[in-house]
Image 1 (cartoon, one colour):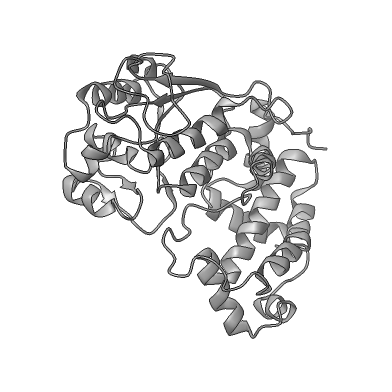
Image 2 (tube, rainbow, N blue to C red; image 1 turned 90 degrees about the vertical axis):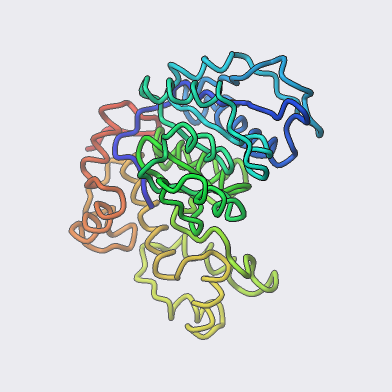
Length: 344
């Protein structure tokens, strides 16, 4: 449930596009690239205006466009990474992962220069190999797709590789696992920059969960409920509409027509988190939205979120986000973040 205390707003997002010169981009590599392009490259003026400015950085003459339907054409050379507010590496050539080939030197140099210029550095899936090659992950916690974390750890022992999480946030350096975890991290960046309200509306627009925290399990043996009518979906939707109530695991289990033990087991299997942790995540996400978009007193927000007193809200909010609710609200006023009405 990590988040930046001060939303800096949108800026320039530069994505490094470095296909294998022999085969282009694989379908998996294009998947993560298109996730980043979708989140940061499509203007959303009703959510925030201005939106992000996107740069695709690479060599437009390198190799074939790759198989599949999406053929990226860089708009800037690799040195266009320098000066961007955020730099994203969605992948490296498969040979750099599977065969141990070195990450292209031009990419490593460009990443070091971008980091030195103050850019926030982000990797999606195998892009972590590029950040590691540039020395940007040394001494930091990082992740990648669980199938590749063993190779990442073996080649870069100075990196604290965590194969169990969806993404990591080390403030200026962030990494994610592959596939949909890349979307989780991109939405997390929007949440940091523009607030929970904007990120939540964008997530609903993309028809994905509003917030999966980075600490959720990356690999779950039974990733989905056993049946479509197992009762989890409806009861979780109901819970998000009634967070002001003093909900307990027993309450939710009863509504799902399960024993508390069965409900706990099924929710853990489906989401990688416990019922109490899931409830706290939803309550804090609601608190963020109310702090951003309303002038309600902190005491009232605590009640609306089901956290009771202002003191209890402050305790959990500060522990999760590293900043008090009042300071979080003030940061939105100071930066003119969208969707915020002055506190009354």
